[in-house]
Every structure is written in structure tokens, then in C-alpha cells.
Image 1 (spheres, rainbow, N blue to C red):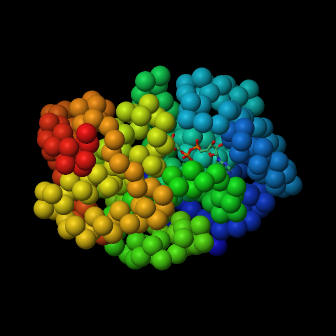
Image 2: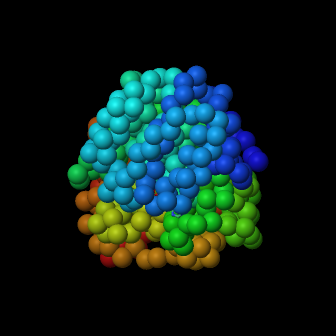
Amino acid sequence: MQVVTVNASKKYDVRIGTGLIDNIGEEIAPLMSGKKVMLVSDDKVFSLYGERTVKSLEKVGYLVKVFTFPNGEESKNINNYSNLVEALFEAQMSRKDLVIALGGGVVTDLAGFAAATYQRGVGLVMVPTTLLAAVDASVGGKNGINLTNGKNQIGTFYQPGVVLCDIETLWSLPGEEYTNGCAEIIKYAMIVNDGLFELIRDTDVKDNYEEIITRCVTIKRDYVEADEFDTGKRMMLNFGHTIGHAVEACSGYTIPHGRAVAIGMAAITKAAVVNGYCTEDTRMQLDELLEQYDLLDDLKFKAEDLMECVKVDKKNSSGMLRIVIPKGIGSCWIKEIYKEECLKWIVLGGAR
Ligand SMILES: NC(=O)c1ccc[n+]([C@@H]2O[C@H](COP(=O)([O-])OP(=O)(O)OC[C@H]3O[C@@H](n4cnc5c(N)ncnc54)[C@H](O)[C@@H]3O)[C@@H](O)[C@H]2O)c1
Ligand SMILES: [Zn+2]
């Protein structure tokens, strides 16, 4: 078992290991004085791990209510949020009680937002069951839901009381979900030079879950502690995401997030070589690693279409945006550019 402690506005542990679900009752006991738990999950995850989780909670005397919804990004919507907070009220949950999110990023984002807003904040436990949620979505306090045409447009910063990452759950992940998580892991390996790049090149991520997830969570922890509310340094975690988000949107969200980020990382690195910010050797090393994890795809959209989807920095009203540029393996920096300049980067990145 590995433990990473996050010292943000709230201090909490991320526990990474095996057997956590079967002991979840004991794990959460220090976090609550009430007796009620709302277990939030999607239909797929609940069918795989719901019964075991409920049993483990009931074994130590908790009253468990369950809220599930159909799996998939479409479920991260206002309707499910509304139904969930109504269910919390119906169950007469109070701030002494606890919401447990069991699932991937869709579940942790939706349950996190409900826990943050119901009665201005009730206890929250994250139990990530996808690789992406384990290394990213469950840690750091961002939550949210989508509007009809706007991803993650409503949300808060709200840290959980504990994150319990039971790596045994990752064995049932479909191949594409594994690949998606690997893209975010490669992102961490590109921004911090701590040997992670070599580790995931020389050993398969799935053969070394505990160590690799711990390393990624530690990297994320450091950025969250330095900039919890995402006003500067935390932006580094967006390596590959400016073009990646545009790729996702241009594909009508048929290209999943992780794969889109991988395309974004390859494109920005290609452009960085042309602009003299990093070497061809860096680009080749990244491309080889992306290929190893089946993540090397072309940027097959038109530059103008991608530009339509590039978001101007929310924190900057003057049409500027910040992009993350690689200097080498394990080293990136943040550059502020005009939105129009972004088109050049996208073209150099290989867009049509
Ligand atoms: N809050 C943040 O900081 C943050 C960071 C990154 C991503 N996100 C959000 O996370 C979401 C994506 O998360 P995701 O990729 O985990 O998607 P997801 O939650 O939709 O899970 C992907 C699929 O895997 C299934 N699944 C989950 N665990 C499983 C398991 N153990 N075995 C078999 N199947 C399993 C789910 O039912 C679903 O069909 C997006 O909405 C994104 O915006 C949030
Ligand atoms: Zn991401």
C-alpha cells in the first residue's frame, strides 16, 4: 500500500493498493460521525463492484443508499446532478454523512459536484476505478458537469476526505480505457523529470500499477499544492490539452480524451521542434512511447476547424491563451500566446 498525502485547503490521503474496496467500511470510519452513506456509481461499475462495496459498508453498520446512472460521458449532466442531490435530501443526509464516488471520472466529477454543493458541502470519498480517474480525475478537487454544448462548464473546487484507489478494479478495464489512462501518464512523464518516462518505457504500465499511479498522483499533488485553484502553475498539467481538447471537440467527442491528448502532445512537440524549443530526439522519444501504448495518431483535422474549438484562456480577457511547450523529456514550460498565433502552432503540428 502506498499513501500520498495532499496538503491543499484540506489535507487528505490518496491510498493506492489492493483490498481497499473490501475494507472500505473501516477505511472511511475516521472521516464521519454519521451513519449514512450515498454510494454513487454508473451501471457498469456498480454491476462489477457495487455489491462488494455495499457489503463492506454494511458489515460495519453503515446505512447505505445507492444512486446509479447509465455509464458514459452523456450522464455527466444537470438531470443526473439534480436527481442525485434530490436523493441526498430524500435520504436525509447531513454534513455528518458521506458521499462515496465509485467509478471513473464521470462518476467522480458528478458525485464530487453534488457533494460540494449539497448543504454547501458534505463528506466525499473517491474510489476511482479507471486508470484515468486514478491518476487524474479523483485527485485535486476539481469536479463538474457538462452543459448541452459545453464540457465541464459547471463545477467547483472541492477536495475529498480520502481517495481509495483499489488497483484490483483496474483489471476489468476495457483496452481503450487502459490506453486513455496511459496517455495522461505519458503526460506526467513529459512534464516532470523523475525517471517516470524511462519506467513506463521499460515496464508496461499495467505490470506496475501501484508504483506508477503513486508517481503520477505525487506529481499531481505537487501542482495542486502549488496552485490549488488553477491560476498559474497547475496549467502545466494541461500539456497536450490545448490541441487535445480541440481534437475531441472536432471529432464530435468520438475520439476519447486520452487519445486526443496524445495527439495534442505529439502535435505540440512537432511544432516545438520546428520553432527551435526542443530537439528532434525528444520528439522521436515521445512518438516511440506513444506508439508503444498504441497512442500515435495523426492530427487529421483542418487547422481552421481545430482553431474554432481552441478555448481562449478563461482567466485572460485579452484573447491570449497559454500553451505548454516541451523543452525535453520531463521538462515543459508555459508560454502565453495570442489566439491567432495558435493557428501557426497547429499547422506546424501537422494539421491539414
Ligand atoms: N476532475 C478532474 O480533475 C478531471 C480530470 C480528468 C478527467 N476528468 C473527467 O473524467 C471523465 C473521464 O473519465 P473516465 O475516462 O474515467 O471515464 P468514465 O467514467 O466514463 O469511464 C469510462 C468507462 O469505463 C467504465 N469503467 C469504469 N471503471 C471500470 C472498471 N474498473 N472495469 C470496467 N469498466 C469500467 C465506465 O463504466 C465507462 O463506461 C471526463 O468527464 C473528464 O472530464 C476530470
Ligand atoms: Zn486530461
